Amino acid sequence: MRTAVVVALALAACRTRDDPAVRPDAVVGEHVRLATFNVHRFFDTVCDSGMCGPNDYEVLPTADQFAQQADQIAAAIRGLDADMVALEEVETKACLDALLARLGDVMPYGVLGEIGGTASVDVAVVSRRPLAAVRLHRADNPLTLSNGTTALFSRELLEVQISTELGKDVVLFAAHFRSKVNDDPARRLAEAQTASRIVNERAAQSPDALVVLGGDLNDTPASPPLNALVVDGGLVRVADDLPAAAQATYTYQGYGQAIDHLLLAPSTSVVRVPRSSKVWRDGNGWGGSDHAALSSDFLLPY
Image 1 (cartoon, rainbow, N blue to C red):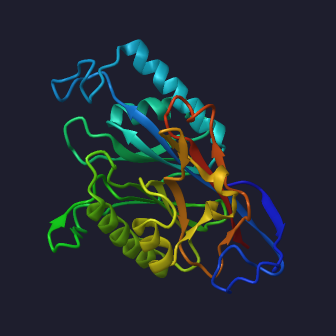
Image 2: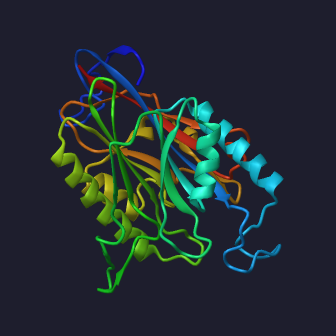
């Protein structure tokens, strides 16, 4: 974590006492930055599917191409200057290990939420601090869809906990909800509803912890999945205090969309630093991806 930070938070907006963005007095605490970044189809040099041609989903890079993509992604992660980053679309441990080897001086710790599918691109978390706990939620939390059928999360719902220098708990959930390609909106909604329950239960277990859900949720503010998380679940979408146009993390048919999110669980002690959220881009995306990255800052009061 970084050095102590003092932030004066005004009550001008008149929000409720449960909003973690509002504190009437100056706050002194440990500064934590969390981020999410869909790195875009980071495949290793093994063709698991047996179909890695120009028109196939799985890509088979040469060793040099793999190294170049790893260099580019690692540099992009480094540029975020975050304490933990949720990553999406990382194929295998070989891919994660390549990133950690390049980030060893700043973010040497990480874990992959591997679901074991052929050529699956999965979620991961990288961290400045050692991983105190890792939990996988996909297998034990089947989704119930609106028609009564069941399914699983599209990718792992990966929970990673670290401790700050002063012993405060930070919990980051990495998620990647169902894509809109061959869309299944009922499944994406069920993912949001189930993730909301899991995140809120985790926050209730550790009321002084910083608990955040981050990832490519493949839907926009006020959509049914985001409403399930924010309106029904009470999570705070921390980029909501940016101008609407500045929140976009993905460009579709020429229009910017906010589909990558950081959502803060309710807390009586954690403080969201107002207007600290930043969308990182160089062109349409960040670090060679078609997605921008998103970061936000928090304070854990002493």
